[in-house]
Length: 112
Length: 392
Image (cartoon, rainbow over all chains, first blue to last red; front, side):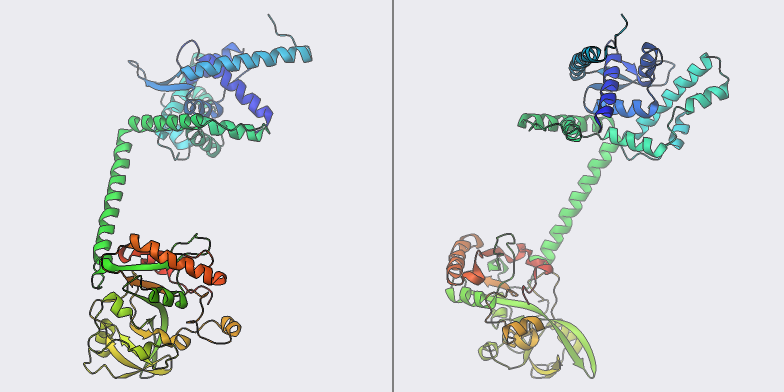
């Protein structure tokens, strides 16, 4: 995989992990949250969201569980595992480092 | 709005156990998109169109991607692959890391099986039936074909193989001189050799191919097979250089081809264009210590030059057709009868001391070669492909 793709996938994983940090969410909720939080700039398509969720589940970063609520169809909720929380911390730190370095090199500034 | 049927039709069948869950989950996602569309003021049809547009057009690629993600490699391996693709130096994983991966895979497998009890039941049932059927069939083969070989005191009869020079093949065929040395060493009560030969029987102008075997004169004695009617090969008929054309018929052949003619012994048959005299008939049921073989006639090994001649190239290189004095040409199967009280295990050591002596004496042909001794019922000699002529 080219480094560029790896970068994209790394950021997508980070976004999903962050979306699940506060509570469990189902696939649509995760996509919607990322869409909303990024102001529509970052969008997950079904084609990439679910394979990525399954891959992360396989790596035991997240855990999926079917939940049935009265009057609703069952939904699969994803929860951050302990391993996932650890990975989230590591990825945050490394992305933070990268962003700071990018700022220094390119002069890009992040809005406060 | 339920999109399950739509998703099911859109996606090609997924070859993974969680397929129904994936279909459910994607259908739920489309339902959410539909509801979102409606809440944005879209008409029913427009909301449906918006929802289904979320599914990728290339359904095959999408299905492959879902399957691959669901069966993703363990994290450690995946990370190593990625690092390799990116040209990063690979770190050698610690042993415990590989074990942790194994444990994680096992846990995942157990969890997935627990989630699909029906599938798990079918898998266990299939495995149980498969293993059971295998055991039953092997027991039947063992009882019918191996243990019931019409050989006297079959537990005392062993197969003896020569190993390849590198030791890679433990069950290779043997040469006549090696057999003669092993026999004269007296480790076994007696040793015999045999090899398959093609025969052409001329029955009143009609030629018919039938399987035969070339055997040392003591072959039937070693196996404890009594020849009747008739007799075994004589010492003279078995002597290398002898040209006395004689054969022993199988009981089945005697019955089928000659209607059990009581005067068969002494009759002359036309085999491979030459006249051979029938000297005896094997008892009913005897075929061969090799599973799957059913020779119709046996001839003494002294007749090798005309019944199992070497290839034209080898004959040119040797300058003659006699393989019986060629130590480097291994084309014979060996069987032996153990000394009283001996076992294949405690005989192997003595037999291999002879092999070592042969290695020292004949380094060109015997370097690295040893002997393997196994009970006849357990020998891979039961597999006919083992019977081959190396070098001819």
